[in-house]
Amino acid sequence: MKHALNRRSLLAATVFATTAFGITFPSAADEKAAAEILKGSGSVVVSTWGGSYVEAQTNVFFKPFTEATGIEVITTGTPDAAKLKLMEQSGNVEWDLLDAEGQMMMMAAKDDLIQKVDYDLIHKIAPADELLTETLNEYGFPSVAFGWALTWNTDKFKGDAAPKNWADFWDVEKFPGRRAVYANPRPLLEVALLADGVPRDKLYPLDVDRAFKKLDEIKPHIDVWVENTGQFDVLLQNSEVDLMLGSLGRSTIAKEKGLPFDYTMNDGLWQQSYWIVPKNAPNAENAMKLIAWMAQAENEAEFVKKYPYGMPNKKSYDLMSDEIKSKIPTSPANLATQAKIEPEWWTENLEAVNRRWLEWYSAR
Image 1 (cartoon, rainbow, N blue to C red):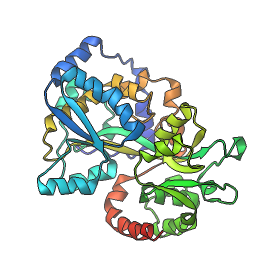
Image 2: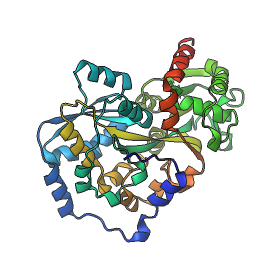
Image 3: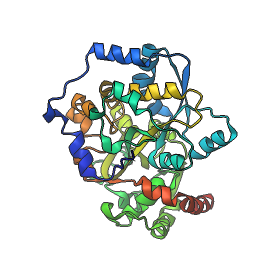
Image 4: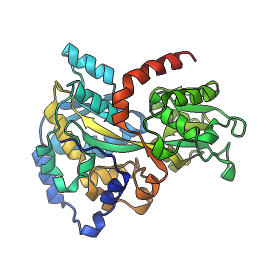
């Protein structure tokens, strides 16, 4: 039951066609019924991404889940493939649920580190015909389709003088200033190739040699290497950088808070994340219940008010304003300017790329 999210047009057409089919929404009675189905005890430990992101998850998903079911949600960070493998090998699994990037989910399934999703339970809360089937995987339930964006300080770059694409990010003479990037080959390799003129639809298979050659050009000009995504919130709050390869969601929140930052969807990148449950998670049943709770359309629509990310429940989109939809990386208007990060390529090439990356990165 593996459904790859490979066709942008299919995703866009499916997501935004819901209004035409006269969809109705669950009543308060339905929500009460969901709470009854999911009632339990004990706790569930969730490994997620920190900062404003986990704050939004807590307020929209986790606290209401605890109030409705009696199951406590404990958050910890950050999802880490190597740590998950070590936990499973040692027989000391501390996590029950992880918000994993697509490539991590695929690798974990390949290594037999995670268990299959309890879709029978999920469909009791969010029926199968409500869900975007092309985002589903037997070992992972889609959490968000999130994005990466070119972000800049509007006190430094105003109006037409602002950068417009990754080639501008590389142009240190025309756009001088402190720069920050996510210290990970994904999406840095994709960004480097876009900066070097590779068309968005021709990125894969990645030309790794060409990407590292382009990264060599910008490496001396990077002031901050972000190793934890929560650090983006700090950089934005304190206006510590002028240009950044940053999280689309965190950049959006910073702008809406009135912080002096803006971003562009042009040459942005997006990828699908999944909720995964370790094979020997101590509270696996509670983890599946939390997944089911989060799959409800109303919950997803409320979450995107805080974080504009793509959601797996088709019905949630009818509950979103046009303004919110315009900020989602997988909306039709934005897909045309975005590149999708392909987890299949990264699953096949991760080990070799990571070896080269670590050598390159440690030589700063």
